[in-house]
Image (cartoon, rainbow, N blue to C red):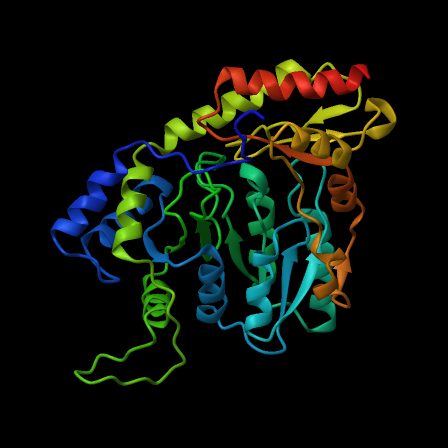
Length: 376
């Protein structure tokens, strides 16, 4: 059996260990330290955000975002249905109710037309949702110009889930910097990683300061331990931030390699009947965090699950797209707007290995297996 090919494994440059060793030699092992500040500052410089807070996960960042923008029990929050459950779980943490919005086919992200319809109806009934969480899927930005225009008109807060979109662009700006708050993830499978962790960004200093306080058990500024709010242990450690500093230095190289891998798949497989690759939106830069292909069984002869299982037989990891949230057992009963687009994408989509350390030989293996399937 050949060495396993993973979907999107961590890819270290070798520089990260220098920052970690520095943290050890200076004994900055405790949760906060100079690398944490450095990581936040460099992240702001890269994304264009004014303020940043490094967190223990992207999920923690979304939770803090909801808390600091005043979302509470009984409120409604609109969120993309085609996403990972971490985009939705924090809504339930604060006692709010999700409203799921379908995707549009161009980018696979939240459909602005459906969003506008919902807000228009809610406005007439006098019960607008408290926030909207658009998710930038697989490295492609949502149409933030239209989404922000709609939400600004109705006075609804936007919290961007940019966990999968670090390095992307939309009209020259970085996703995650359009709304009130943006959230990023450094999970082990992301384009850069701190092994686990996230980042909350905003141009609102007061909001970030409040999030920082909540993330460190909501300690009040007293010599003793004083607490006036419920706090959380959501701060990233200095050691993980040291890894992040090293990873951030090679982010653009990783983006370029992800894009090259996608182009390779498209070039080698795009001629096969029944296989479709999503285009990059004209006004954006798609990082291709994961290379995704749609597989029409009627034309190709196999569905996405059959292709996945065949790759697995060759010790190659691939993965179906996110199962829409409105189809998940835990979220049954919540309002859903549309759903047919995200359901089609789930039924046909397959994420192919997109690790930036993939060799040409490994890519050829993957392509050969898929092409051979078509010939059977």
